[in-house]
Length: 144
Image 1: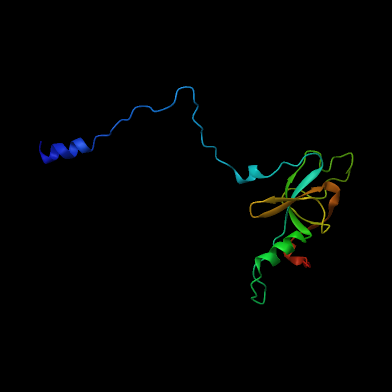
Image 2: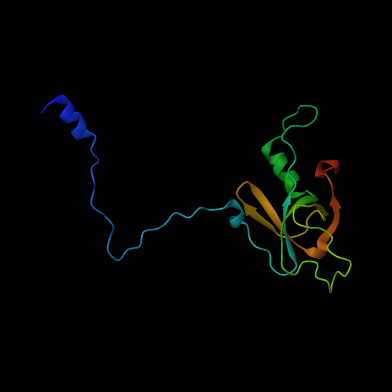
């Protein structure tokens, strides 16, 4: 066999037999959307992500992870992630909703249960626990 014949023979694809098990369905990999991991609020509840302050102050001081975590727990501002199907219904709120998805809101310091997620926590609030809407949460002084 010449060198050319050997090279052409080595370039051929090897076909393996189908090795699936009879009676066993193969698991298809599902693409997990990060948004699908969050709980879906029911009734008149709102899912809120508390505001997380920057790791570095204006003066250049780097804050400890524990300090940042405590400030997030005591935060009064949050981002509305999801709203339940009965939030701000016309019967209870004839003037319309107080906030909408994607808005920054101000709530009581320890309002709503906290749900731990990867990277922090979220809160589940009732629609009547929203105190105000905020344009920029960094404008609100976070004291803890």
